[in-house]
Length: 72
Image (cartoon, rainbow, N blue to C red; front, top):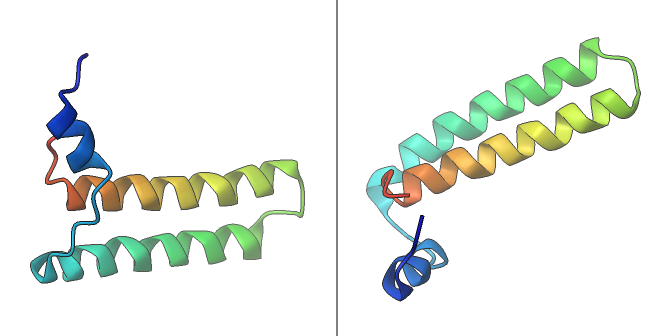
């Protein structure tokens, strides 16, 4: 896959769109619930730490999909 300079710039631009705030909030709330559930039910371990990182990564990637409107 090849990305044009304009597409790359778009991917790394802050997208402040008030109409998308509700979507971000829904993703963030779901991530918080999952993070707390993992914390409450999984023993402290490298796997739990990895799960925490994956929740954070999933949240950030989902928010990027919202910000970029599914373009990439």
